[in-house]
Amino acid sequence: MPAPEPVNLKEKVRHLPDKPGVYLMKDRLGRIIYVGKAKALKKRVSTYFHPSRAMTLHPKIRALIQMIADFDTIEVKSEPEALLLEGKLIKQWKPKYNTDFTDDKRFLQVRVDLAQELPRFALTRFKKEDRARYFGPFAHSGLLRKTLAQMRRQFGILLGDTTPQKLPDGRWQLYDDVRQELYGFTNETTAEDYRLRVNDACAFLDGKSREWLEALRAEMLSAAEKHEFEKAAELRDVVFALEKTLAKTRRFERFDHTAPDRDEESLRLLGEALGLRAPPRVMECFDISHISGTFVVASMVHFFDGRPDKDHYRRFQIKSFVGNDDFRAMEEVVGRRYRRLKGEDKPMPDLVVIDGGRGQIGAALKAFVAIGVEPPALIGLAKKHETIIFPDARAPLNLPLNNSALNLLQRLRDEAHRFANTYNADLRSKKIRESVLDDFPGLGTVRRAALLAHFGSIERLRAASEEQLAAVAGFGPRMAADLHAFLHAAQPTVTP
Image 1 (cartoon, one colour):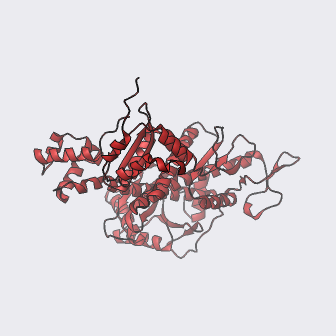
Image 2 (tube, one colour; image 1 turned 135 degrees about the vertical axis):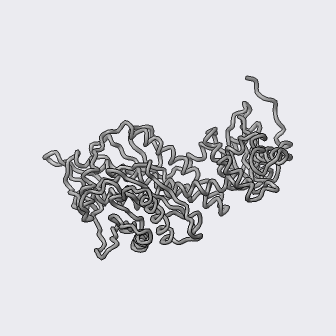
Image 3 (cartoon, one colour; image 1 turned 45 degrees about the horizontal axis):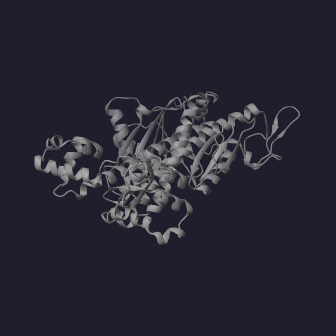
């Protein structure tokens, strides 16, 4: 295929607008080699073509500039929208120079080589194409190191700095002394028993990875809304890398059948610890999520026989008030959930778990009283020390960190937290996408609501024809034509 005609890049830059957007740098064959975002397209793109700056730039950037033969731009409404579009296009095109820059950041990961007789959990910045499992990358190295220290206590695992010794009888001495960190675990064990600890720790770390992913997404959107775009872009890169790792983990798990199924035993132990008449086969857990009091939402997850039952998950927007009050939010969503079960004459769960301490569990109990329902077994799980709180006069309960009943409660609570954070991030992202309509003249709240109710999303709205737009209540052919032109000018189609 012949190369395209040379482009006068400086002349093309002169015609760019001083508006936010995304630019796509291309080589002489028309391939996209770099995607960037800009607060002002003209000012940002022009910096690539100042010869006097060339020697002050990083060698990779100089190499990029030498490859540029043409560029495209996409105008958007705001910097947050530019940030999200930049990330979407990087994922779509995987440009050479974006990949190089991202790889240079080298965030920490956790490596576990399951082929070893005694697998150890080690930190690394370089991922190899081997058969080991990797968790991460993680943007917050301090939090990761703290989590690994907690895992050593909770699961009795080996970290990368240990040298276990094999005993004459074939067992292993994990440490050269009986360290306090092992808590309820024996220092001398068989490789088979140690493998069970590793399986539990991997499941825990995988759950933590998913929880941190949702927290990172929310943090990224928060940084974008505060105009902290460098921070937001860095967090976005970590989110992409972590999503990629988790996708590989899910593929790994489909072929890994070595982990034992101990849910039945965990349920039995949990029932005994809480003084229940029988193991709690049906459990529901509630969590509240917000950022600085905005986008307050709640989640409810449903476990059956110790496993997630996602068909029965529920999520809630807070309707009874505006602001930041976790207790009122908890009272509202618990009341809404079980008022509905009562009205539909459906059975209550065996156990309700509230993410939080005495204040949150008191709010949940108040909701049951208000709807006239005898509450099922009800507990709170306070995260700081993993303390179980009861609604009655019983003293708080702290189970050993390696107790499988506590681990089951942690999985339930962490899943509720993940689900709430996902909903929060979705709402924030939707707000950024829908803000494009703010600049269309003559579109009041009634017509805006009619559009979104009719099409369901900005993406479907953009794909609609003029005739389909004109069919919405309050729109005629003229306004439909103007809106169609506005939407397609705001985000033109990109071609390689």
